[in-house]
Amino acid sequence: MCTLRLECLTLRGGGNVLIPCYPTGVVYDLFECLSGKMQESGVANCPMFFISPVADMSLAYSNILAEWLSSVKQNKVYAPEEPFPHALLVKNNKLKHFKHIYSEGFSTDFQEVINLPLKRKQGQVLIETNVAQKIVPVEVKPGISLSTVTGSLNVKDNIHKIQELSDIKSKPVKYEWGTLNITEFLQKLSQEGITDAKVESLGGNVVVIHLQAEDALIQLEDNSTHVVCNADEKLRTKLRNIVMQCLKEF
Image (tube, rainbow, N blue to C red; front, side, top):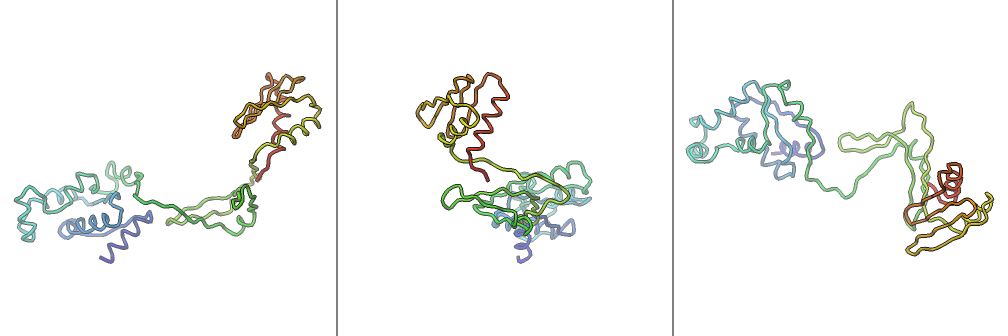
C-alpha cells in the first residue's frame, strides 16, 4: 500500500508511473488495488495503460477461466458481475490496452490532456537572483504593487521557476496605468500649441475634449480612450503621445 501511495502522489504531481509486471495473474489484482487507491487519492481520471503482446487475450480470458480464482471471485464468474473491475475500467476508458508502444493510437492516448480534479488557490514561483534584481515594483493601490518580469518560465515536477533568458536581447517593456489627469492633459496640449480645447462631461466618468481648430475629439472613459481626428495620422500620434505622458507606468 505504501508503494501505491507513492504512485498516486507521483500522478498528482503530473508524473507518470511505470510498473513492470507479468501480463496475467497478479496484474488483475494490481488493476483492482491501484484503481481503488487512485479513486481515494483524487486521480481517478488518470488512465492506466496495459502494454503487452497478449494484453487483449489476457483481459478477455481473465473473466471466464474461473478455476484459478479465489472462491469469492469464482462465484462472481457465474453472476452478472465481473470478478475483476478491469472490465468496467476498460468500458469507462480508464484502462487502455495495447500490444506495444508503437500500436496505433497509443501515442495519441498517452499524450492526451487529462484534467485532474485539483483545486489550487495559491502557487509558488521561484525567481532566479539575476531576474529578481531587475524587478522594480510600482505601487498602484495601497498595499498592491505591480512590476513586469522578463524571463523564461520553466515548469518541471510541478515546480515553477523563472529563469533569465539566454542569448536573447529584449528591450524593457513599460505598461501605462492610472486615471488621466485632465488638468495636466490640457497643460501638455497647450505646450504643444493646442490652446482651444473645450472639456465636456457626459456623466458616468465619461469626458469629451473637443479640439476645435484641429477638428478632433478625445473621449476619455475609465478603461479606454478614443481619438477621432479625421484620418490625420500625425495629429493622432501627437495626441496619443500626450495621453501616454499623463499616465503612470511600471
